[in-house]
Image (tube, rainbow over all chains, first blue to last red; front, top):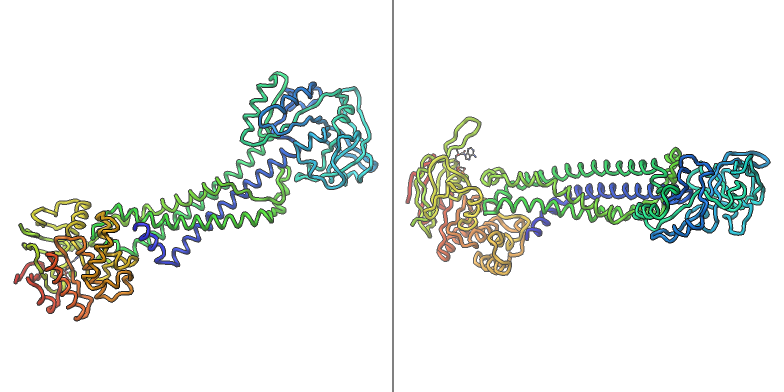
Length: 406
Length: 225
Ligand SMILES: Nc1ncnc2c1ncn2[C@@H]1O[C@H](COP(=O)(O)OP(=O)(O)OP(=O)(O)O)[C@@H](O)[C@H]1O
Ligand SMILES: [Mg+2]
């Protein structure tokens, strides 16, 4: 009966209830969509960086990360790879050679980062093979093949099947160089990366740089992000700490972590402002409700209704409005997120300055149940909290005065 | 044992430093099963007296005893409990909760008393039958006439089997036919259920129908017939 009474009271002033309910629903949908877009954006950013050129975890010879020198190489890659691949939650691992060099065509030349990769293993740890624009990715049978950024190919004015010369300082004295045939070009979310990165087969890199079977790093992918630290810790215990260094992507690109945190904080701030507005809106509405129903509340009190019951009735009334709002708001956010996930949200010019962080131009929202649950619950709590003061005012009414007033 | 006894009841309202004496020493005894009208011109203190008897307000001086229990000292929630168990109220108009049907309005008091849903419904239907509104059980108040609404209010006041029903000008908003019908109904319930009715009025036609008439003037009892 209490709920029935409260429910009917909600719909007494239909127009006002509809307005406040839609306001809460819209606010909630705003929070949820914003959060979903932020999560989508940050996961895309992480995936773009981690999935293209890093890996969830990288293993180097200790000291390589600071010096980037080829001397600090892993000289038993097979053994380490076997160990890594046998670790729980590791989904793939790939050896890489990483060095600086110069690429030249007949028309131009550019400083580049050379990545020597095992094509099959690399395709399992990174998305680079899928960022294909023309031609194909490296294949296991390739010897002196090169896969380079589309932007770089344009700059060098080379097409598929043409030759370029790679020059680099390897372990042997003097500069080494060799010719490579272009098999394909790629484009990632990061124009800078595209302009300064080339992929060649691992064996070709090792021979160009006189590495003699050694590699610079092992890139590791894991099957779920929440096991990141755990997998890193396991690898650290498995690999001799004075020789190997195990770094997670969070340690490899700390500013990416900061950036995603910053964006999360913006969401919280936005949500906070919205919830505060909800509280004000509901408090205001409920105060109007109380003043309109003064006489009626006086009669309820006169009949012997306990003040606590009146208090509860007002809170239930507000909670019911909150529930309807949360249901509508969740449905609305579902709709918007679904629509955006088909279209993607084109950030256009806004991302140009941020592309070095791996931000994509078009972002797709990611709606997790926890986003919906937490935002919905917060909205509900906000509406109930907002009714406390008005309900308190209702409880404080003196029946005689309340009945006379109207 | 008297049902109600007031001793030297005084009420002074304070309005921005102006003191308005509404009751100036009322000594009144009401027995069980009485059918009593409190009459007096506007401003004579009828509403004030009923409010004090009903435990809705506190006197400035003097006491009210309900079945020899002093109620003037009880705190707010004890008073609420007392009203719920022992007193029924009928006000001048707009007595009913507008979002509840006639039946639900009558049930409301029993809900507060913690009576089970089945019994509530059965008793509410029975009393609505007694006040002649059985077929209006599922109507909302705004679709009933003023007279019908007052009957529902009387049904609600009596359904919880109180000792006393206080009605402040229950007929003030009714035409003479409806007033007369309401009085007949109250009189009948007074006889059938043995409930004391105390109602205020300034309508001579209504006064005539009372068994006992207490006249108030300027906050004092000025006649008791
Ligand atoms: N809350 C209040 N504040 C100030 N004065 C009040 C208040 N309530 C009543 N009074 C005054 O007390 C006196 C008695 O009022 P009361 O309402 O009891 O009279 P009444 O006989 O019921 O009058 P009516 O027939 O108009 O209803 C009047 O002078 C009235 O103006
Ligand atoms: Mg009055």
